Image 1 (cartoon, helix red, strand yellow):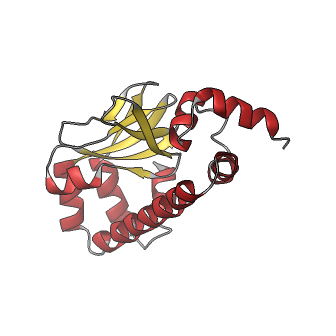
Image 2 (spheres, rainbow, N blue to C red):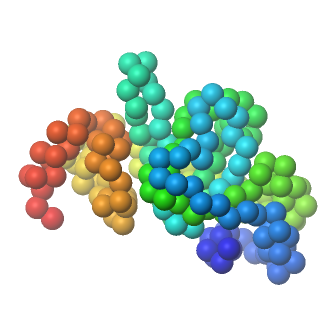
Amino acid sequence: MKELFDFILRFGNLNQQQMDFISAKATEISLPKEEYFSEAGKISKQVGFIIDGILRVCYYNNKSEEITKYFIEENNLVVDLESFDNQICSSSYVQAVTDCKLVVFERKDWMELLQTIVGFDAIVHKIISRALMQKVERRSPLVTEDATTRYLKFLEIYPTAVNRIPLSYVASYLGVTQSSLSRIRKNITL
């Protein structure tokens, strides 16, 4: 729980009573590798905070190919925001890439925290804004750059994750085949 509060307190202030209230609403869970935190076609019901592990957001295109949109590492919130906020079916999957440990809040508890704790909604808004900016910053270069540059950018964005993510997911994220990624990796001397 300490990791969660270290993260939240970077975006605003909470007193001990507020932190105790948040703790009382949280559940710590383990999510085994390959398991889903949330699934396409279902309504997202939880907000999570990753204590340990990596998750990925992915979907299937019209050719039934699995496409990885991005990865979420430790010390970040994870939620399918559109599905969670609007109570609509998700179009993406959020899947554990590694065994994960998360602090999770059910939707009703999260809503209660937002309505009860003064200023918590402002803190959450800052966290969401930061996450959306990061998502755009991380995806934008992938559209215009060649595959080698995209891979180097991936290494820059996810320096501690590269050896923990299967190459098939990295290739999917970069929009290349696994054999292309292997050639790129072979040609790069780091």
